[in-house]
Length: 438
Image (cartoon, rainbow, N blue to C red; front, top):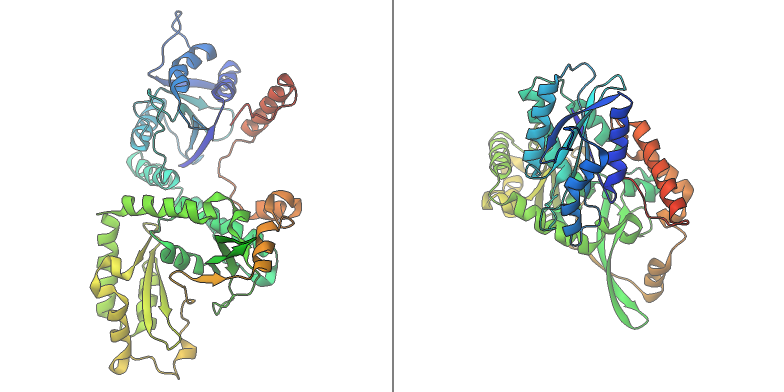
């Protein structure tokens, strides 16, 4: 089962879209939770809207308070209305929306029967309900529901979608900026990393590195992040791309907030204990670094080793693709810190000699916090370079679109409906650009 989550401003658009399905007898209302019935015992769009209005009126600062979720079982699945109701209720409870008013619509107009859930993500006092790690939590809930209701697993399809996003940058293919964008815009949606070093370790798997730049522009100190493409040896092979080209999520300020969220989420987590056990088990089995890394890779764990110019290990990071979390060795325990691996890999027969180095592919060197001092003219170029902005280059946007995932089960008719709603809104407002749908 695949979940698609959309946030929007106008609840009338999504209610009208789903109500139209019901009117055309291509859908039905399966469940109305905390919704006031109309006097005649039925539900109208206006009646549904009244149930959400108190929450929207109390909304404080949430720009997109409307939540529209579709849950799409595999076409081979035969799900009863009762099971759909139970699935929707459990999904909303585990996502943190169990106390919200919500409506569950069943759509039957395509070859895959599926449900849509309409709700709001602000509570009765107007406070936003946390959506931290929303997509990751949603995927985990869907996996549990698949097992509980014996549905066809969608993990394979989800993996294919992620593969479309998370492909290593190949500088020989060109369009490097679009390739980097397809990675950095999505990593925070799927992985948890607790600091810049962990983030850079994760980026290195996709032939990308980030660096903090400092300099002066018109006499003022300036700080920021830039991204580079790497080759197979971990060497920079592109000009720097300023973080603002890839949106707020790629900038230092937003990443700092994300580190805090990740640390809070992983504090005392079972993921840490499981990873610690797996790494400890492999340490007992592996005679050298190459075997150590391969055994962990077989278990879905990538290892990034950082060495100084003299070849000494000064950092080891583990990226657990099972739990989608990133850990420095020292966070797991002192027995997994850099010094422990330096001693283990440097003594006796475990030492990797110069004659062996060509046979062992090491992960790219990843700086803990690289700071690059830039001259003013280059800083001005980074500050004012608008010609390469993603929003201004339609050809780059097309190339980027080919790399982004196409959500399995996405309803094309729903997209067309939303486009029509936006056009009507603009006509009514005399050309305004406030969207009417999600």
